[in-house]
Image 1 (cartoon, rainbow, N blue to C red):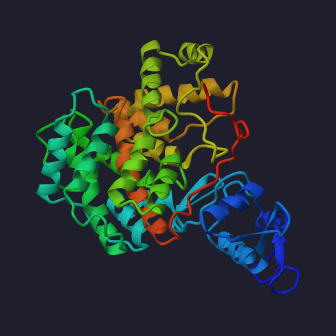
Image 2 (image 1 turned 120 degrees about the horizontal axis):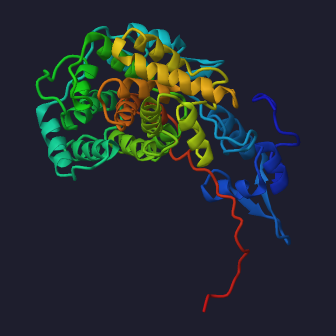
Length: 419
């Protein structure tokens, strides 16, 4: 039904629950969920058990749902659909605001790509810096954590500490949120403990992040790979962590809290932590000298092979392709690159899987003296910029729209109180 088409029947027509559900493209239970949320009003049928709904009100809600990207999750396709102007993934390529993301990452720094995603404008040479007061607060909180604390936990604590120190955090205007973003990201990096202490804590964000990931000195080629990785990972449509951020922003949580929601989800082994699994796999292959026995052990244990395949790309992940191209220019990365190629070739004998960005990050971390958790840190820091961009979009939408209805499948009431 097109937006311009009126509902059938005379003005003031009442629709049954079934008719309203059909016009909205949802289940009858969802119609009542709309009533409970105040989006529809119902009227009892005189002498009957059913409810009726005003046709004009149903039509208005249907139009609003189409405009907002779908009012009911799963109404048509079984998946939540959210309108966004940020990232398009299409046929083994992806784009930031219509610009090829891999080309942008190759030519611009992480900070410049973040600004483009936030504002649609380039700011050549921009770098993000944080006031020392914010950094000191975050560092104190992070330094109080146990030594074995995971990097995502450190980042989450740093974000919470930075929020507590910002009395203006509840200002959700675009200008205020962008100001928060430009301070929060460098604060997160500065709050991480250093591995190397003789490198100046200035310059592009990648230069400041390196000594918190590796004790090795950084050459320009390696810094370029790290900066490109950050830029490539800025956003990737509605990944699980990004959806969590949009849900938080839909409830009008401030930017720090929205980022904290993303950090909570990214820790899963199927998301941000996947690079660490690929890192360990690479080290095992390097130790054995061949991928075949390592892959065999993984399959025998019933585990999926990390670093391979992506549900959004039939071929090679374009982010992996871009990083592999840069890593080929670094001699010390050659052993890890060869191991990665061996993993792909060995697995391809049985399944048509291609390398994804987790495998490329594993080559970077394994060949740069970084721990297995380093890719998770890179992922989280990079994606913070994308989370802010999605939060900004969501702040401009109707509040609490990210509220799907549960499909209850438990025992039907009423039941007696348990003994």
